[in-house]
Amino acid sequence: MTQQQQFAGQVVLITGANRGLGAALVSEALRRGAWEVYAVSRTPFVHADPRVTNLVADLTDSDAVRRIVGTIDVLDVVVNNAGLAIVEDGSDPDVLQQHLAVNLFAPFVLTRAALPALIASRGTVINVLSIAALAPPSIIPSYSVSKAAAFSFTQALRAEVAVHGVTVHAALPGPIDTEMSRELDAPKSPPEDVASAIFDGVRDGDEEIFPDPMSAMFAAGWGASPAKVLERANAEVSVA
Image (cartoon, rainbow, N blue to C red; front, top):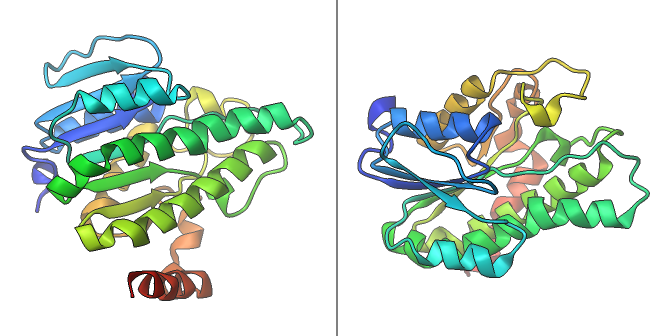
């Protein structure tokens, strides 16, 4: 399968789609043949490609999320990309709650709402997380906690829906050259490169995708790591 055929005829939903990595994911899905892309954002925008439909929603409003997903009859791919990252010291529970609302509960609610359509299409879920889920930087502790929780959700969901033919992928990039990472003093990868590598990982069947040079350090040996071996064993128990 070529890149241009990967999403041929498929309907894709991407959150946080109006800028940064989200905008790059929209462009990449179109380049790979998506028939229609639902681009979810907090504020309205117009995309030049007629295959893109903008859906405006506050992802922390669970009822609103369920409503917009309910308007979509056919869905092949869900990309939970929208995220929040605030530089702080981890001492304020309200800041932690803000991160959990966007980075954990929003993808949880959206994915649950989309599951009937994804089961019907034997579709794909891609949760865009971060290597901070595995190794938290000291300047974004609440973000790291929320992404670690979202990684656990991703693994649990994978075990749950595998029997229905739905695949679930965790993308774990390092810093990306977007507005969200502006204050982070570290090498950053272009969002277009990360978007392409994420979809390459999905095409290749990688459950965990490390789509940039910084995250690639985790890739070596990941499939045989104790954590991954235990995840597979736990999944077999749950299926049994």
